[in-house]
Image (tube, rainbow, N blue to C red):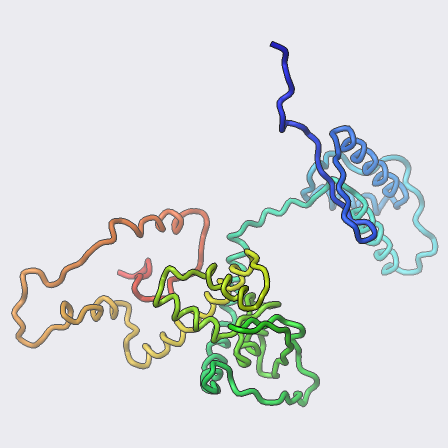
Length: 348
């Protein structure tokens, strides 16, 4: 039986480029890929020969301590040329060096920086940024609730510039509401440090902690919270699709991620407000939930005769143990549960 070539094992690659506003597609065989690598290496070495010897040493040292794919030899080939005599100061020399390096990296093909960051790193960074401003967001949320006009939006006042100069401005940001979508701009007062403080004071909450480009109205988040409490099967995915139908826009998967990020921070703000109320009422002890969860079992009367079984407890059939492996694995998650239904690990 003659041997035949298996399908799907070709080393060809597809290259996409944009020229004159049009997208072009080219199939690169293994031979064409090698030709491109040789041409890129030749162009890179030619540029390196035109640099001074000291500059080549700096670049070789930088490349040796960095991680680049498919890099296995230095650039110092041939006799280096003399430095440019027209350079009048050290700043101009540095500028020329970095200009050459930037041009070299832009023209080289087949080399890519290896990014070791994973989704856990991005989640931890966002958690830290939200934690830094959470106290400010809770304070401005209480002010927003005090200015609520009854429809979920605060009473707006005209912007007054600060006396020490022009205030910061959040320009051209997307505003998502239940029945409308538009773009607007907001000003940060002198007492506000984070963009989301200004957004919450106007009835919106950003989807990112530092540089939000899309915001969701707080009343939209509140409506979904009550819908989800009444019908737990009503998911964020369904809510985002409903908003897309109302706004007459096609649904995109990233919309659910944006809504989920804003809704998670909205729940954290509500949890912080509830914690403050419980602290005033004296209901913030670590075992308060366990002692007062069931009045029929835990509320004792004076001279009440003891029962054979003081209370009945049910276990979830080890359903919560599925979180145990991820909690104690190498993927560390610094987030803590918002409710006191789940005791902390240090509670005994």
